[in-house]
Every structure is written in C-alpha cells, then in structure tokens.
Image (cartoon, rainbow, N blue to C red; front, top):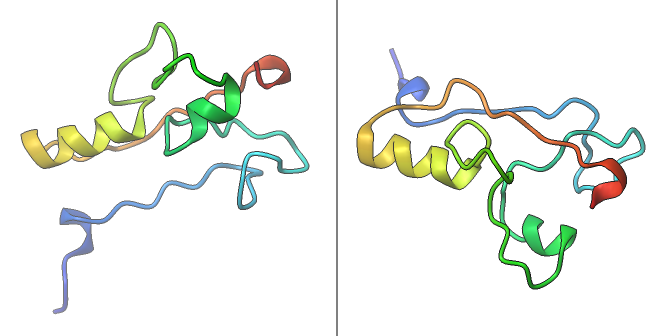
Length: 85
C-alpha cells in the first residue's frame, strides 16, 4: 500500500556532482536546468544542449513531455563542456 511514486516522481543523480556546477571532479552537470545557460554563456539564450534539443538532454523539455504526453523520463543525459564554454 501507499503512494505509487513512479507515476509522478523521478530522481536523477549526476555522478560526482555536489550542490552546484563547481564540484571537485568536474561532472557532466549541464542538463538545461534553471540558470545553467546563463552560467555558461551570458546573454546567448542557449537553453538546451546545442544540436540536441530534445527531452533526453533538456530537463525542462522532459518535464513538459511527461506532463503533456504522459511519457515519464527514464534518463537525463548530462553534458560536460570543455572548460565550461
């Protein structure tokens, strides 16, 4: 009994990531979350991983797809840019 979490809750861990992008091991932290585009390149309007604007690499697109199309994400692909640029 209890609440079925799988219908509305997902947890995705990013290996090596602490609280923010400046973790000691330099993890693949870019998943198009809030404020990440601005942290990489100020003023460009980059929202997703260039060339891969899809719900597997963009957390917001994954959430929209889950809510609007009832397709829950099975994974989120994180990206690591060389020198964070």
